[in-house]
Length: 118
Image 1 (cartoon, rainbow, N blue to C red):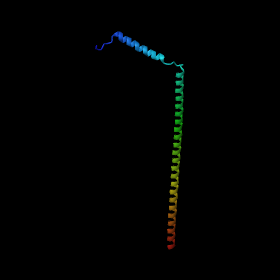
Image 2 (spheres, one colour; image 1 turned 60 degrees about the vertical axis):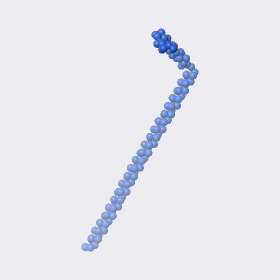
Image 3 (cartoon, one colour; image 1 turned 90 degrees about the horizontal axis):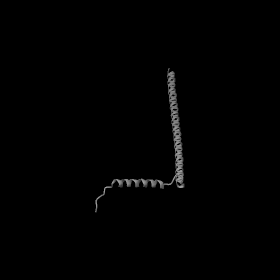
C-alpha cells in the first residue's frame, strides 16, 4: 500500500479546469428565459404575489374599519359619560334647590311663629 500522493501543479490545474467546465455545463443545461416552463413559473409567482397584495389590502382595510369602529365606540362612551355627568349635576342642583326651599320654608315658619308670640 502506497502512501498519500501530493497532487502536483498539473493535477490541480486539471481539477480546476474540470470544475469550471462542470459549472459551465450546469449553467448551460438550465432552461432559458423564453422556455414555456420558466414563463409558467414566472406567471405563477406573479399570480401569487398579486393574491398576497390583495390579501394584504383586505387585512389593512379590515384593520382600518376595526379602528374606526373602536373610535366610534370610544366617542359614544365618552358622550354617555358626559351626559351622565350632566344629569348627575342637574340632579344634584335639583336636590340643593329642594333643600334650600325646605330650609327657607322652615325659616319663614319660624319667623311666623315669632311674630305671633309678640
